[in-house]
Image (cartoon, rainbow over all chains, first blue to last red; front, side):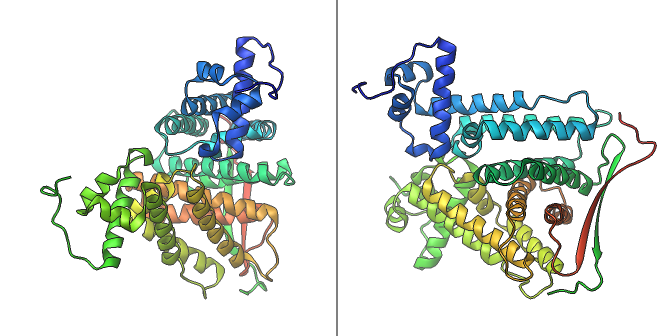
Length: 220
Length: 220
C-alpha cells in the first residue's frame, strides 16, 4: 500500500497514538455497520500502517472489542459523580454528566450502543458488565438498608436503562432537542418506574402518578 | 451426513414444513449467538436435509433474515387489536396482547430482539421497519387531529418501546414476575412518558406526576 496520499504520519507517544487509533475506530464503527468497516480504512484515516494497527490491537474483531471496552470505561468514569449527594440531586447530577458525555463523545456513544454487533460473545460480555454496573449503581442509591432489590424494581431499572440509551441515540440524531428537556424526561421516567413498583425513594421524596378523567375532554 | 439418528422425516405440505423450519431456527437463534448457530444443526433438529434448507432459505444469513421478518410479522399481527377502543382501553388491550404473545412465543421474541445481529444491514432494516410501525401506531392513537407528533413526544415513545423490549426480555428470563405487574409497569411508563412531554392523552384522561417531600422521611 502506498502511503503517498495518507495523512502525514505523526510522531506520538504510544499512549496517545493508541488513543488516536481508538478514536478513529469509534468514528468508523459509529458511522456504519461492523461488516462495512475495513481495517485498511482505519489505518489510512489514522495515518499509520496496517501492520501497526494489527500490532496494537490484533484483528478487526479484537479492535472493535477494545473500542467498545474503552468507550464503556469512559462513560463509567464520566458519570462517577455526585456520590455524596442525596438521592434526587445525585440522580440529576449523574444524568447531567451522562448527557454531557453523550454530547461531547457522540461517535463513542454510537459505537458503544449502535456499532457493536450484539452477536459477538465478547462484545456482549462487555455490554452486560456495563449494564450491570449502571443497574447496581441505581439500585444501591435506592436501597435504604443494603437489602437485595425486589425483582420488579430491578426489572423497572433495567427497562429504564434501555429507555435512556434509546433516547440518547435518537437525541444524537436530532440535536435540536434541548438537553434540559431530555434530562427531565429521563429523570421523570426513572421516578415513575421506581414508583410503579411500589418502592419509595430513599430521601423523603414521594412520587405520585394519577390518571384522572378530565370533564369535557371526551374521547375523540 | 447420515440420517439414521435424525428424527423421522415428516411429510408436511410446503407451508407447514417452512413454518416448522422457521420455528427450529427461532429456537436456535434465541438460545445462542448468531455465530454459534450452524445450518447443519438446524437441519438435523428439523429432520430435513441441509440441501432442503438451502433450497428454502438460501444461506444461513438469509435464513436468519427470514426468521426475524417472520417473527416481526407475527408480533404485529398478534397486537393488531383494539382499534375501536378509546385510548386507555386500547393501550391496555394491545399491551395484554403483546405480553401474551411474548409468553407464548418466547423463542420467537428472543430471536427477534436478542438473536439478530444488529451489525447486519438487512436485519437492521427489518428492525427499523418494525420499530417505525409500533411507533406510528402509538403516535396515531395519541393524535387528536392528524398533526405531526412533536419531536419530544416521538423521542419519548421511541424510548418507551426500548423500555418495553428490555422489560419483556428480562421478564422471559424471570417468569415468576406476574404478567399483570409487568403490564401495569409498562402502561404507567407510557403514560408518564407522554405526560412528561406536555402532551395530553386524547380521550379525556389526564396523568399527573408529582414529586413531593414527605415529612419525617429525611435523607438516609
